[in-house]
Every structure is written in structure tokens, then in C-alpha cells.
Length: 197
Image (tube, rainbow, N blue to C red; front, side, top):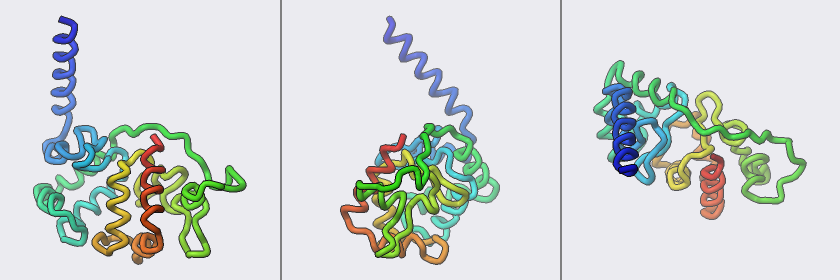
């Protein structure tokens, strides 16, 4: 009996959450979750990303400047004012709190991955990830949040920037950085940011 009550409560909660999803965003919920928390490996976390960033990515998919067969067809289902509605809806969703670590809080970073995140590698002209993505990768302005994002998604995007199949970054900054990262660094950075939850 207790299991039936819990199951019924879960269904009621699911339907009430789904009822709050604007129709324009319902098409996104299958892969990104009703509250934008992401459904691995189908879709990354959208919750808390800036609305302007989400709008830009939808437009990049629609114009073919950003390549993903699924997203190119799905993005075409969101047009006009609906793009802004989708973006505003997911931008307003809660994201897990992360205590930010600021560059300079430690004098040295013996861990190579943390060193890339907080200091970069200036011998290879790689800026610190937090230079653009903010303390602990929490996101700043148009630069998306990396903290708590799926490792598989971060890795796939770094590889896409590296190969040139993902575009839309100002002056090719991400392409330039990604081409200098080794496969093991890409794996390590992806895991590092994914664990910041």
C-alpha cells in the first residue's frame, strides 16, 4: 500500500511539473528533462543557462552552423516567439549550488587538471577555463555553466570544437583552445567539471 501511495504521489508530481512546462518547451523535455536537468546521454543540462545563450544555440542549430542531426530537426519545431519562451523557461530553472572556488585562492595547483581550470597553461597559450566560464565554471554572461554538466557532453563538445564541427564561438576562441588539449586533458576536464555539483 505504501508503494502505491508513493507511486501515485510521483505521478501527480510529474503531471503537475509537466503542466508547468510551456508547450513550446515540451518538445525539449524528452531529452533535456522537464526542468532542464538533462537526461544522459540524450541531452545536456539546460537549467540555469543564460536565456540569450540558449536562444543563440537554437539559432545555430537551425542555420546549420552547429551540427547535430537530432537538434537540427528538433530546433526547427521551435520558431518565432517560442524560441524566447523556451530559453526563458530553462534559464529560470534551479541549478545545484556549488561553492565557488576563485582563482588565486591557492598559491599552487599540483593537480594538472585544476591547474588548467584555474591557471591555464601559458606555455601553450591556453587560458584558464575560469577566465571565461567564471569561478568553478559556474558561468558568466554568454559563457555557459560547466559545473555539474554531464562529462560525456563536455567531452563531446570539446572534441567538436577541436575538430571544427562546432562553431559559433567569438573569434574561434574555443576552437583555438580545444585544438591544444590532449585527449587525456579533455577527459580529465570533462570529469572535473561534471563532479562540481
